Length: 499
Image (tube, rainbow, N blue to C red; front, side, top):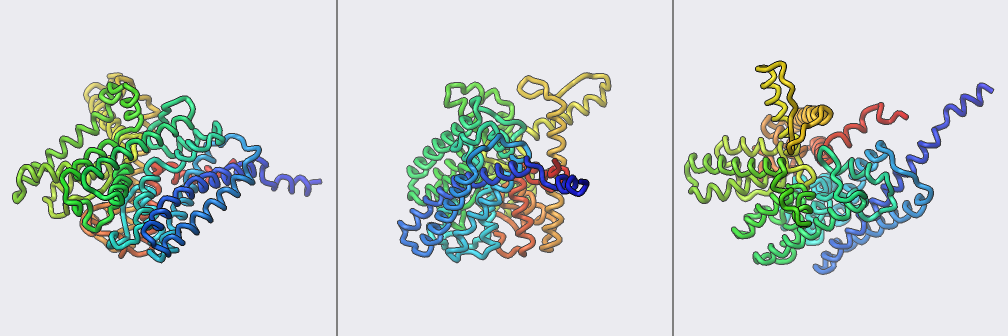
């Protein structure tokens, strides 16, 4: 009898099997949705008659759809709501799975080695924009289109796309949405999460169409306009030329880049408010005002440094400063000029901007402006308490007091962000032997989704020569930064896996 009881005790809980089934179903659904997007680069490869590339995309598309559809069909019945723990697993595993899927066309077309294909795919989907490709213009058009498009897909996020297209995910969809959408809280544009996700994607498509038309009006051909649109909307940073956007040689194109990098680093919920006739909500938003003011002030600061250091006219200094401050501050990482030739003070401003990032609820990476705001407010409150120990104060945001729980969350995130940044810096330095500045900028470039850095990883350098171990560290930092730390790091904690 005791042996039978022991046998029963060792059996996994029935709920665990149900959880595995839910996770596998959701991953299958995600794989199915994203696999269909391979039809776009497949069509491009057909148009340009790239037979080997056509075969690579056709094979990947067929395999992804077949595997995803099989999983959805076999696991679809009797599913219950997704738990918070399962949501974290689906998002983290889903991103790893899709980055792997995205690497397959690079491999089958013999464009990149396995590790480089994984790196390039991860960099695209996480909108980091770091590359191992020496001359993008030498890639087949189908591969180049997929490389650019991967940023656009990752900008809004796969899970948001799946939640929008798969209402059958039910109430548990909020777990996935909350685990992926960046910010302090999940913003609902409508009561139903699936409706909110759908609105976000429709808005994303609308802004994409507007930007595409503006690029075409600037004289760009359709292929270049589409690839550039993908990079800007996602604040990704991949370009189709080794010369960056300077290859277009158009001031109009440059300023369109600046405008839409700023737009896409603004919360999409605020764009929705403007479209629905509530522009005052944008103007009253403290995070957006702080973000915009920071970019303006630092653009002027950098322009003054460039002008004062000599060799640059005031107009040109302002032109270069605005572009590079906006590009860096929005974590897009596009380079108009080689800023490593600038004065050290100007480079230092860009380095600090790599940490900040854009607004919560945007496609930008980084710490996010709202966290920086709350940190500064808390620092001011602490200084006030040293003068008036008995004062009862609390940081305010949008004229409302911020709860202690939120402040603890912000402090915890900032501390963890800096810890991961320093650990990444140390790992890169040890593995590669690079100097501290290069290692630091490579670490924050990946963690903050900026892509470019300083010194050996500058705006016109790439990561092709990095050792294999360093590339693995960098890809980990990309995904961890894109999912805002907790979704990935919580998976390594033993208590996360306990019932």
